[in-house]
Each structure stands twice: as C-alpha cells, then as structure tokens.
Image (cartoon, rainbow, N blue to C red; front, side):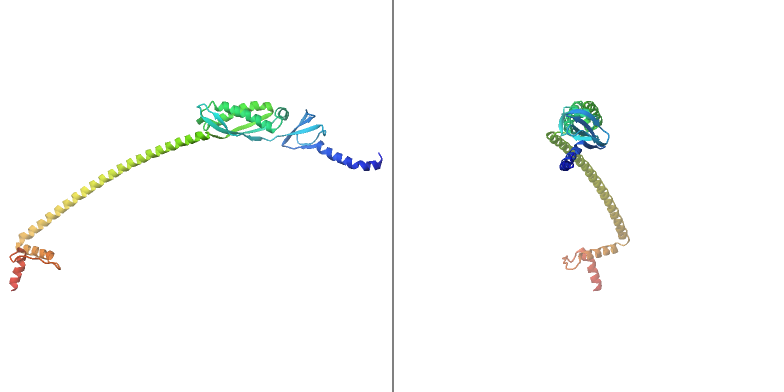
Length: 291
C-alpha cells in the first residue's frame, strides 16, 4: 500500500479499532455471570472472572448477578383458617444458579421478580388458609414460612433460580378491622379497670368499717376506764372528806367554807346574802370575836 494513502486513512483505521475494542473485550468480575448470544442464539456461559472476548456486532454479553438478591412485595390480603383477614407483606431472598435457564425463561430481573412474587403469593395464600390467625402471628409463624419457602423453591428452580429464604416483614389486620379490634380491646380494658376500681372501693369500705369499729371499741374502753378512775377518785375523795369530818367536824366545815369563799369572792363580783345565811356563818363569828 502506498505510504501516502496509508497516512491518509490511518485515522479511520484508528477510529475503527477504537470502536471495535469496547464491543470485543469485556470483563467478567466475581459478582457477575454472562450468557453470550450470537444473533439471538445461545453460544456459551461465562462464570469465571477475567478478561473475555466476543465477536463485535454479532455477539452480545448478557450479565446476571451471582450474589443473593432481595425483592420485597406490596402488602396483600389473605384469609386464614378461622376466616380472619390478614394483611401481610413478604421479602424474598434468592440468587441465579442457572443463568441460561434464567435467560430463556424470565430474561431479566424484572421478569424474575414478577414470577417470584406470583409463586410466593400463591404459596402464602394456600398455606395461610390452613392455619389460624393466632398461630400465624405467634407460635407457628417460623414453621409456616419454612413450608412456604420449601414449596416455592421447587417452582423457582424451573427458572434457574434458587430461593434462599422467604420471610413475612409484617402481618396485621386490615385497617377497618383494626379499628373494631382496638375498640373491643379498649372496652375490655375499661371493663377490667372498672372491676378493679369496684374491688378497691369495696376493700376501702371494709377497711374504713374495721377502722371505725376499732375506734368505737377503743373509745368505749377509754371512756369506761376514765369513768372507773373518776369513780375511784371520787370515792377516795369522799373517804378522805369523811375521815376529815370525823376527826374535827367544825374545822372541816371551816375549811370547806374558806374554799367556797375563795371560789365565790373574786374580783368585780357582787353577791347578796341574807344576814342569817349559813354562808356568812364563819365570817360573822370571826368578825364578832374581833369585836
């Protein structure tokens, strides 16, 4: 070839090579697996990482994930064995184990997620319909999900997919049912609270009654003892007075009169007695003696 002509066309050659290299050379890393097709027909599967080649324009590299993928579903309504409605949303973990079968059946991730949702929805509807609501949300939940995952795995294998796990993120009653359930729960709690209050008031009445009874008994005993002591004191005083009177009646009368004078004649007190009153007896006698 004439050198001058080569120099004229070398930019075109360089551009052609630059265009063909990206469509000829590609990299398969550890997270990918590739299905090579030529004009739409399968040629080979590449799963080992490294630098790979393909025929430009004729061959196409279809990349698929090796890692575990996760897909979540929108909440759906199910009917349990005891005819209760249950709203649940599940999450599925899965991976592509047969890229060729995957490519032939579902083509891409969107198609795979749609198929998996259909499979898991169907299995959940069938399995949840054979268990009571209380068991689904408590004791039997783990076993139920293992059964669902086992049945769904068999169906997912038809699409080159290995189902790793299926779990319910949330299981609850429908919104309109929740309100009625909460209303019943509230009424039940109010009934229990009312019962506790009644029992408390009844116990309070008993305690108050026992307290009043004890108080009345104590007051009666105290009054009885006070009256007894007062009687004994009066008897002792009477006995002393009697002894004093028996020893010297005139002196006893005189002392008692002085006590009466002391209690009667206080400041700013005016008393009127007749001249022959017994109250003035000792005063008159003492006055006469002084005279």
